[in-house]
Image (tube, rainbow, N blue to C red; front, side):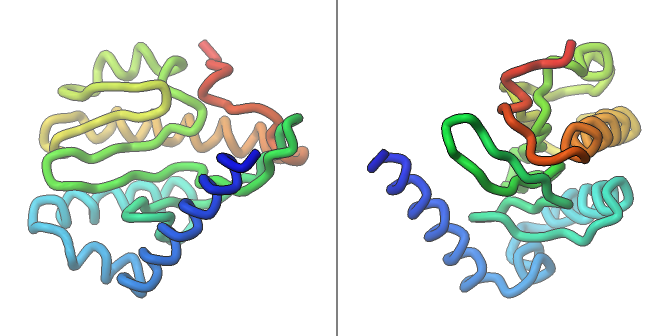
Length: 163
């Protein structure tokens, strides 16, 4: 339990440092190198269109859109972004909170990328098919919103893959 509390304190501390350093998403984007900023603008517009929500900074450098509430049997409870990404020079992380497993067919058409359980890693947007990424993000957004419409989500979605 102590480790969980320490982890939560670190998470909040990181969120506070981001909000102290960058007063807005646009301030954060202005701090990025030119190519990363351009890719970030494209992803921001895409995710804002999909979610109909403004971008919000989450912890250190993560840009998220919309939220869902979760509450697990363990008692852990909170809010998470529905879709989002973390832009860095040469490596953009796109978060799929429902995981990557359910998108195998679309991911095979995406272009140059790597994966983990709930992340798509892209060097630059010119390496991928943006229309395919948009389809993946739209499906992920719709799935999470449908799962959360009747109350808090009770499981880690990416660990309970939907394929």
